[in-house]
Image (tube, rainbow, N blue to C red; front, side):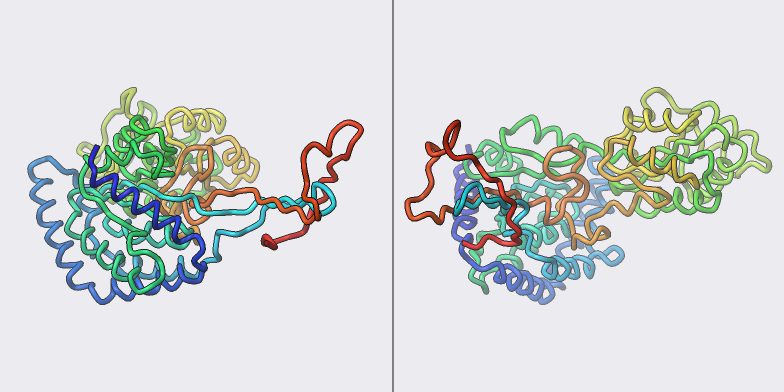
Length: 454
């Protein structure tokens, strides 16, 4: 085991423990301090990101890195930088997720019990590319009172290193330890940390299904994450044409390499000669490749006039098509006879991430949202909305598709747990031996409380 990794884990645990009596307001101060440091170091960070991109482009040409990972690496693309800094402010402005009472009761006269939210401890977060994730997760960890160790992809090491330095510099100007947020760079360190369950309390892998599964199979520490972003849209028999074209096109083309981009389109059989060809035309015009089952393929070959790129952008599906996360301008398409068959198909082939129905039927919308077993289910809205920032969480550490603890975009609420606090106000204290048959009975009288009074 790497002694360096063990030292990092110990420092993180100590930083967490030493921060427990620091007022939560100091976490907000720390976030503003970090944002100031990042802003001051912008030019150097973006220059490092440029160097990472140039090196990554060589890897893409050699086939050792995918184009989708390259696009995620770019910190200048669109409004990534500004959104990253704004995300810090958004998180800082959110209510403190710790110290909230979700249950309070009086067991006996003067014996009070409170269930109160608290920080989890030390987080180990492992992700690929996307250097802005370093800042996103640091902000959420600090706000929720957790220490964190972050490992980005090696392709973003230059950028990550400078982002980490800015975060440490920001923390150093507060009463929080500058070891509260640390970064590592090697797989060997990850392997060592995964064995240190005495220091690490939660692992959050954010990346490919292979990354997530490898982490899950190699640690005793609790893991939250998602193995795939295999999202589906179902065109219900009552679907509106214009809604279908807008929503499907946005879900596929807005950011094809994102985990919330649609990967499978399910078409109700009654739409094969009406709405489906119109939707296909829009997708083909947007350079989307369609992998179709026989009914949807036949419907396209009968189109008049036929799209110019029909022969180059449309091909037949096979048994494995609907289990693929394309993360590119490729969309799997299948025709099914009913809402129930679509629901069954999604639950079988999807990854329980985000799925949408396009419909004008309220009963069908309700049945879809209830029957599809995914962390997010939508009616007439792009799957790309599955995001912590868009949900109002400020940002997210990732999207969880499991069923325990956190589910969907994981923001502050997913980074806290709870503990029970009990207080006896009796002069002699309370003991269990006074309760039972023929003795005292528990009153279990609900207490109205938003915070613990001790």
